[in-house]
Image (cartoon, rainbow, N blue to C red; front, side):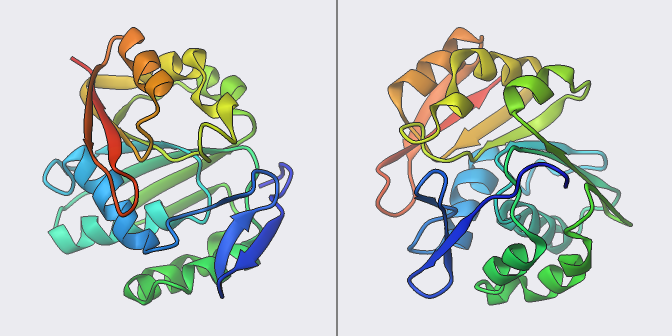
Length: 221
């Protein structure tokens, strides 16, 4: 993780907020419940898990989505290996990662397992291959040769981080989806849904988590 670190403000106890974007990393109500609702249920997971299943993500943040996904993988009893690739411009420090994850007792064991790895861009476990690609996703994603079976779009809000939701980047996301792949995000902003549709995806608006009335799901035909 050699790219510029993210400056973090801690509010309401141990809720991390990006100083750069003035936006919390996860729901103030229940970040783990939001992850499960938006990114797992939104991509029909764990029902679709299979050996070699590949998830890609815009916005690694605190690593909450990775930990929650691996827990779901293990709880489902899926055999084989999960692949998880995340794109992040401003990674948190390992200490901030550990502090943020400590707020989720249900993930304690997995968080402990990962604590010593957060200064490494790649983590290999018997059931997981994780890669963190640092830098501006508008530059790094076009150079990525992989395709994902599911995408988590979890950057900061479009109003505060519009670059991560631009039409050209949404088109790159679509280009890196396998046939039948899905995508989910907490935002239902009209310009994001239009950009995904323009990229050839079938876009649906679904009930959101907590105070968010709607979220977005898309599938590649």
